[in-house]
Length: 368
Ligand SMILES: CC(C)(COP(=O)(O)OP(=O)(O)OC[C@H]1O[C@@H](n2cnc3c(N)ncnc32)[C@H](O)[C@@H]1OP(=O)(O)O)[C@@H](O)C(=O)NCCC(=O)NCCS
Image (tube, rainbow, N blue to C red):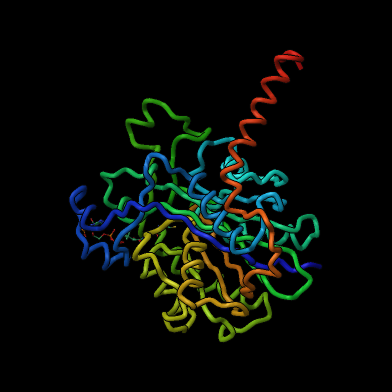
């Protein structure tokens, strides 16, 4: 059975920074309260040209560059997002087109802030089954588009961004090991965007009542999160046949410093074992774990051969953890063509495919 190695990683965040100071001019809040209760200092906000697909595509190309893999080598793209471009088609397909991943299947995965863990596990399982070799897992969000900027309970917490991992099959032991995925739909009302889906289609009423924005019972979500983080981490470690002491680092979902502190206390581990960068990005939902992992590598906290656990929780309710041995790139392929060139050619390919469909329609008619 092949192992699923993490051989590439990348991130993309908007350059626009929104500080606590900026927010205090928009709603009744202040820097001290936000830092005290959450640990967040600032977050990134997408501009009008950026979207979940554009950020996801940039993170994907960065990850492919590290893996030295071409988009056309990909078999599967899993895009985890709670802020997709549309209800359908899948944002994964838009990213597939943007990066020119001509051979890849593509689908979206909706498990909120736990989505990247779910996606990694699904990608790793697909590789282990032998059905695919190269998988791209993306977590991308533009949560700013679903925030009521007058709601101080919500607008202080979230930010935009994307992260991506490349998973590759290899007979060499390593990569993804034990993983757990959990859910409890009885808490589905605790964190949601109530309107815009089939239950409450968009209407004048849903717009007027702000039902298309993120709604949350912060206290209940906080209690749930502090209960599940340590347990899921332990489950993934035990499933891998490891001990907590084996871990070089834990990369948790970046929602609130106090939730991460509670997980550290629950596991009786020093807080230094946890990668934290929520002070600069806020909660970027499913993108937070890959963004934190990329920065952990950049800061030398996560190195080849290290044992790591990724652990997250979120709306659904969902939670989960995945244990992995960090590999780094496999043997470099030394392609003459570079993955970063693909986004230049992909629009041409996309245009030719559209033109081909048009010409075919003109020649043969549009009847089935
Ligand atoms: C949202 C959260 C930060 C609120 O912190 P909290 O300690 O529970 O704060 P409370 O809601 O009890 O509010 C305490 C006081 O601060 C006030 N307050 C709330 N938001 C505020 C803000 N942005 N600025 C200033 N004051 C604020 C409240 O009105 C309340 O005032 P009161 O005591 O006079 O009634 C916290 O509950 C949380 O992080 N929950 C989890 C959210 C999360 O992670 N969601 C994503 C999951 S993926």
